[in-house]
Image 1: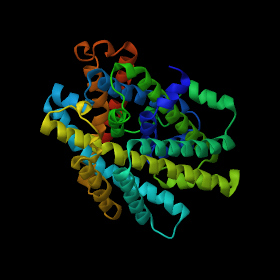
Image 2: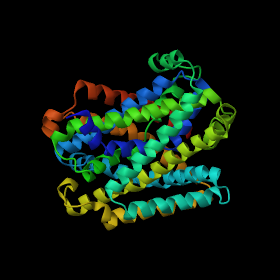
Image 3: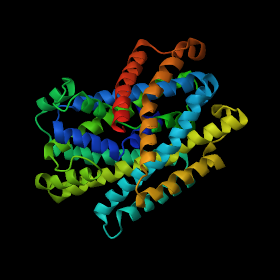
Image 4: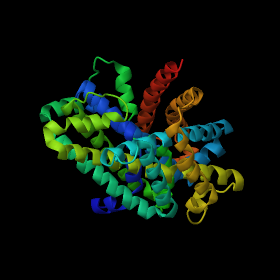
Length: 408
């Protein structure tokens, strides 16, 4: 397959990249640049490689078995795993959707302060709901390609304007070093690149794009390679921008505003608004991707338990089913309450602990399930995929311990 045809066929990976790069990733990369300079560029690249390993395992399972990974959990594993995932997904939806609304509201408020951050957040949530409700997959893919182009053009432009000597960048990217903050900080940067539960949506976007069978393995890997290559490049650019301007605020969504303000002495007002426009594109595209992808998981779970049918074998898209649209409404509407109310401590604790378990558990399950030649035949894990999944288990397992300890 020629390079042109591969680029033409990419799409699900672009949606994963645009969805995974939300406000949290920008804040994490900005904090790394502000506190450690370009020393941790290698950690961002390594984080993108680990997420590639996880998502490739999800796509490989689906193409090799003809079932989604969630269906594999239901059929091949004890019920605990699929029910744990659904409980976590409901909590994740409630917390992360509210955070996305706040981030979108903050980005829009910077441009048009006539409305409050909360009002802008609600407007974005409803707009994303309408886009997903009435839009088809191809329209989503086109929109995501636009947004990811916007993100990269704006942020790379800012990075080039404040970029240090290329030898410094090469040193930070190819020579792994641990800053004085310690290894826990490094691992948090590695773990913060490119999404969490949203990577589970990749299989559903493959299905919407019509990708079925082992013959699509090569296309799937190119698709993800391009997507996570862009993800790593975006994280590198954010670190370079933040290291170049040294913002005073080094945590929270307000950090993006602090970075933008510090660009004014270097690039003028134009640089500030260009960066903020890229930040808005990142957080709103992430919202659209979550609104579109996560309801597939609930609908697949509900339909499989009720009818015992495999999604790949059914005709048409389930995006018009009441299960999909019901969860879409829950996702877009109910978390709005957290924009005005303080989050109850018990919800935060349960969400943090269940969420911390997800990534190392996902890596462990992919290592186990994709290792079976009975299930995947020739598509079973290679030593490369095993190495990536083991590295994911170690990194995210350590972050699990850190996050659980922080709650007690």
